[in-house]
Length: 161
Image 1 (cartoon, rainbow, N blue to C red):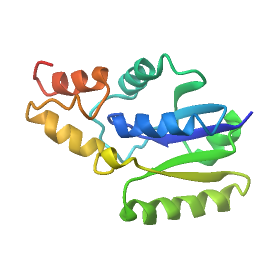
Image 2 (image 1 turned 90 degrees about the vertical axis):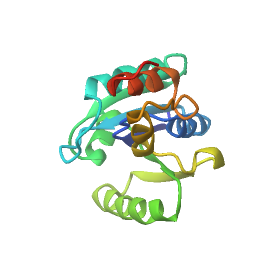
Image 3 (image 1 turned 135 degrees about the horizontal axis):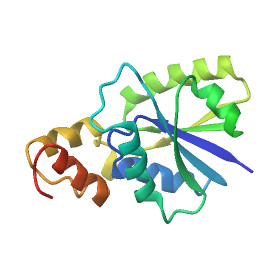
C-alpha cells in the first residue's frame, strides 16, 4: 500500500490544501493529513478544532484521514508506514524553503521521499494567513475555504457567517 503524508499546520485548511489532497489521492492508496504541532506558531484554531474541521471536510473521501503529531515528521512517517511526503508549492519562494526541508528529511531518513505538487492556478495566491486577514474584517472567504472552515473563521472573529 502506498501511503503518503500531507503535513502542515492547516490553520486553517483552505481549498488549496483540499485541491492538493484530491490530486494526491489519485497517486497514492492512502493520504494522511498530518497536523503538525508547532510550538513556535500561535494558531488561531486549537489542534482539536483543526482536526475536527478537516475531518468534516474529508468525511466522504475514501482513504484520506486526519491526525496530529508531535516531533519529527520522519519519525511519524516510520510510525504510520509512509514512504512519501506530499508538499504543495505555490511559487518559487515556496520551493526554496520546501527544498531545504526535503534535503533534511532525506538525510534523516533516506527511504522517505517528497513529492511536490504545484498549486492549481486558482489557488496559487492562497494562504491561510490571507484568509485569516480577510475574515478578521468580516469578509466571507467561502470562495477560498470549505464551508465549515469559512464559517468558523468568521465566527472566530465575531462575525456572522
